[in-house]
Image (spheres, protein in one colour):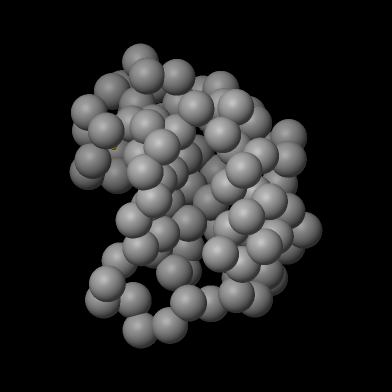
Length: 95
Ligand code: FES
């Protein structure tokens, strides 16, 4: 799993109330297991963070792709077993 934060992001918003996790559910990511990744996020969502499936994020082949907004932090090749790490370290821990 790779993490990439957009360099053009002006700030990292750590307020939990406005953050959302988008998990690509389009064809290529779905073949790579994104439905299970979405289910894992929904099962372990952090307070105040919304989770939703989305259409293609334009990163086909690197999936399952996950985008955390509004900071525009990307995760590629996410496995369901890695979701708890993202939730604990990023969404709850602020990393
Ligand atoms: S299918 Fe997921 S990024 Fe395109």
